[in-house]
Length: 39
Image (tube, rainbow, N blue to C red):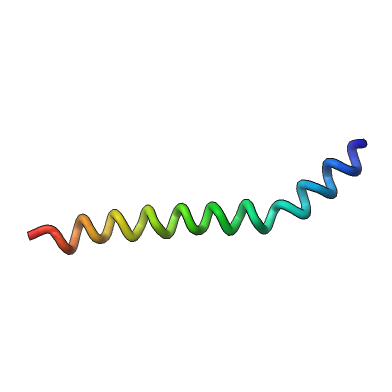
């Protein structure tokens, strides 16, 4: 059972990293938009 969970975790890891990168990117976009586009 432990091996099964490790396998699932290893399979889902790229998706987790991708989601984290997407969240981080959108956060940076919002931050810089507020900084540069406000008069």
